[in-house]
Structures are given as C-alpha cells and as structure tokens.
Image (tube, rainbow, N blue to C red; front, top):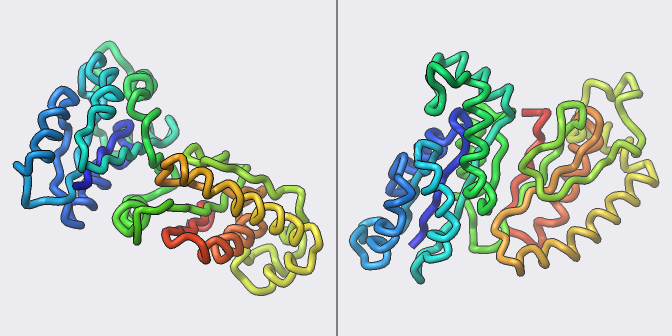
Length: 284
C-alpha cells in the first residue's frame, strides 16, 4: 500500500499535483486534517480502502498549528505494510505573490489584519515540520502547470523500481541556486562557449558546443571528478533510505556548460540507475 502525502505553501501547485495523481489512479483526499491521519492509516492497514493500493492526500497550513507539530510523531507510527512518501512543493515568495495577484485568490492565512506577503512567510513557518521530513522537495518557481505535472509523473508515478530516483538539473547562477537541490556543483571556472559568437545562441545539447567543450582538458577533468564523486556517494545516500536526490549543475547562464555536463552525467549514471530525469531549468 502506497500513501503519498502532498504538502507545501499555497500557490506552489499542490492541487495540480493531486489532480495528476488522481488521473494516474490514486485515491485522493484534499485538505485532510492532520488529526485524522492515524484513522486513515488504520483504514489502509485493515483494508477498509481495499479497492485502492495507491492513496494520495494533501495536508496544508489550514490545519491547526499544534496539529502540524504532531506530524512527525504520527508519521513515525505508520503501520507496517504502508509505504509512505512525503512530497513538499514550494516556490520563492515573489513567485507566490505574483500567482495570487494574477488569480486574485485569497491566501488561506490572509485576512483584514494580515497582508499577503506576511501570510506567505507565516505559512512557511507553520509547514516546517512537514518540509523537514519530505523525501522529495520541488521548487516550482520556474514551472508552469504542465511542467509540474510532468515532473510529478516522472519522479513519483514513473519510478520503475523502489530504488533511488535521481534528477540531474542544469541551472544558471544568475537566476539563483535551485532550493530543492541536494548536491550543487559549480562549473563557472570552465571555458565558456558564450564568448564564441558562433556558439552563443546554441545550447549544451548542440553538437558544436559539445565539440568545443570536449576539446577542453579542464572539462574532461571536471567530468571525471564529478562522475567519480557521484559513483562513490550516491549509493551511500540510497543506503540511508533516500528515495530522491537532485544533483544541480550550475554555470553562469545555464545554457552551455551546465547543460552539457548534466546530459553527459545523466548518460553515465543511467548504467546504474533506472529512475533518472534530466532537467534544464533555464531551457524550460
């Protein structure tokens, strides 16, 4: 029996994630009170919801603060036979404010005395007990609804086994480090194709850029170092019962060096890991 718990700040995409899971055959419950989680788990344990082997619930900040603080204890008491995964969605404050302004929805924690920005900050504090226990954290700041649904499907629904689900993400430092990254590597010291006018508009997936980078000794050395590091340490993460790891590879703009390296590392690691997703944040 699989129980997926979706949480995160309002506007981060929880409803879209839950809708995707429902489309994929999960029995879904929105806005479940934390206090009812033990009863739900007992129903799952004794087969009261026997028609479904996959259940997804959404828990958000509309719960009482004291109930949210009990979350970790309730999760520790999960009955045997229930495989529980916590997925936490978030976005930066500016993105959340923009989304609420565009949709003209009211934030669940805002009122006549609480401004939107303050409600968004307060929500992060309330949900910290859940965020701290998430096996998978997704930053949806740069995702549209279709990209979010695709990511949830690939990383959660599309897992081919119970092994480690690995995401290799390229990004540009000029837009900030991904908040959901577990490991971050900086490639800004490598030769930059951007300064070649013939390569500037291309990406690290285009053959002229690949040829340029593979002709540089430092690039080859970086690949050897990163591949050796990941080969050694990713299995250690897996042995600690980590289900999801995001490896973020960054360069200045996220267009050439990081894209090339993410693609190359993805091909290298695919020989050992079935569940691999390669994502280029700045090319989305």
